[in-house]
Structures are given as structure tokens and as C-alpha cells.
Length: 138
Image (cartoon, rainbow, N blue to C red; front, side, top):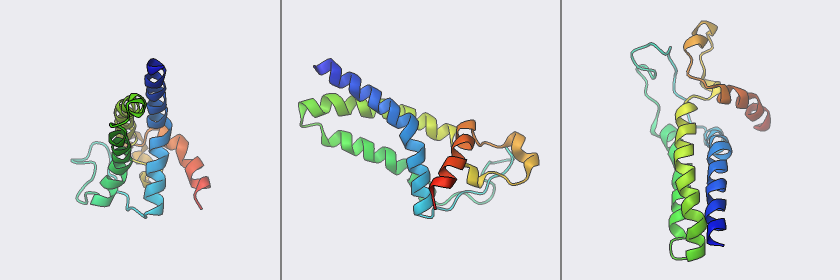
């Protein structure tokens, strides 16, 4: 029974990290009207240029992960909850960090000059999800 809860926590954490984190962040950024950073070509001195993104942009990426950690901490007193939530958090955090580092730019802030597309940091996953998210958000 204990092994099943641990395994279920790992599987759910991996799935949430892979398929739940990026859409949650993008929806948060849309509804909270978080300004997107101005992008520059990949080989520029800094990819943010002279205007770094505001603090709200970084919070929108960190807050969903912090919620999962807090939910995991809440379950510490309960043994059965801990057996599920601790593996969930331990599986979610590294996967969400990989998703966030690979999806640093969403498609709405990609360069409009198509000559810059070679150096764009928009990932294939973010490009594939952009039309779905644009149609889902009014």
C-alpha cells in the first residue's frame, strides 16, 4: 500500500510538471496581464536587452511551483498524505524547472521579424501550444 502511494505521487508529479505547469503559468500571465519581456536575438549581449522583465513576470513562473511545495508541506503531519505528496513534490519540481528553462519565452513575445527566428528562444513545445492557448483564451 505504501509503495503504491509513493508510485502514484511520482507519476502525478511528473504529469503535472510536464503538462500542467506551462499552461498554468501562461494562463496566470494572461489573466494577471503580466508584461512580457522584450526579446532580442540570441547572440546579443543579453537576451533581455536594456529592459529586464518586471518582478511580476518572475513571480508568475515561481508562484505555481511554490503552491505545490506548500501543499506538500501541509501534508507532513499525515503519514498517508506524506507518502503521496512528498514524492509528488520531489517529482514535480525538477520537471517544472526543466519545462520553465526550456519554455522561457512564450510565442506571444517572440520576435516579429522573421529573420530573427533562427536565433529565437521559443521552444518547439511553446510554438505548438501557442495556437491552442490563443484559441482557448478569449
